[in-house]
Amino acid sequence: MKIAILSRDGTLYSCKRLKQAALNRGHFVDIIDPLSCYMNINPASSSVHYKGRQLPHYDAVIPRIGSAITFYGTAVLRQFEMLGSYPLNESVAITRARDKLRSMQLLARQGIDLPMTGIAHSPDDTHDLIEMVGGAPLVVKLVEGTQGIGVVLAETRQAAESVIDAFRGLNAHILVQEFIKEAQGRDIRCLVVGGRVVAAIERQAKEGDFRSNLHRGGKAVVASITPQEREVAIRAASTMGLDVAGVDILRAARGPLVMEVNASPGLEGIEKTTGIDIAAQIIGWVESQARPGFCLKTGG
Image 1 (tube, rainbow, N blue to C red):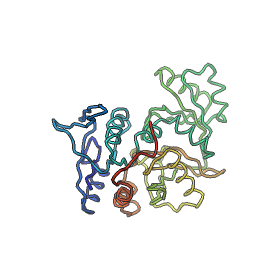
Image 2: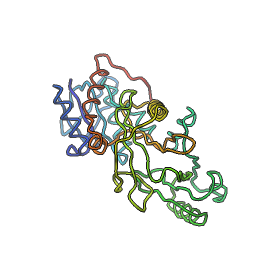
Image 3: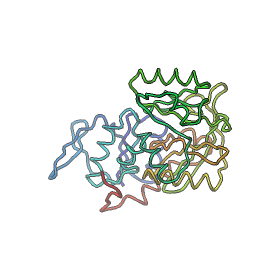
Image 4: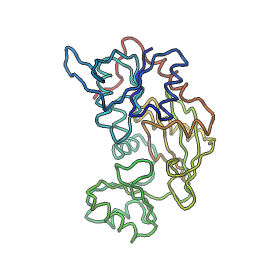
């Protein structure tokens, strides 16, 4: 097969692993910077151009699109979809997952348990917003934040009001969530490929922090997940319409709570922790799905 990997940086671990896994299985691979692509949108002759030439047809496209370029990156992916390439994750699914509010609304509609969450832009009554999620301590997040950036733990009502007022001054959308104390700064990252959890790790926040992101100094160990956690991870990925997803789960007293569904999960931490060749499993899934006459499962 001819496979394109959409990535701004081909030297990143995940991109290199996916390319090598594809080459090992006999495929031809191009790494393409989506921001350098330009497109001809025409019912008779749609095309994608890159570095002065029209790109050939690819049997499959693997998007590694960072949140900062979601709009244009998914537009390029959508163009490849129009041209008949199989997308590992569809453009509509990526934009769905990247919108924190939309994704949480979809998960809640499917009965998937979440931390109690409120969202606001310019709340008239900060006190009521705080009470809505059970009071302090609570977590305040910027909707557009990633990798733990724009996430603050407010341990008292006064601190919560101050943080919300400060974020409101940024003209930003704010998420306010209950703080799951019993999680003790830990979460579970489940890597879902093709409707199966292929690996899971437990991430522990560094001392003095509550954010377990590995980018922020968290540490990881292999996780043994329960059947309920496995089912929740698979349902969450399916709700977003993602073939590959990183599903972050908190272990609360009332059961597993989904924190986030990541449409472009990094492979480095989970592969090195578990020793599982996830890149090969992803390419295997692509092989099973990319075929002549491919058509999208969803529209938009």
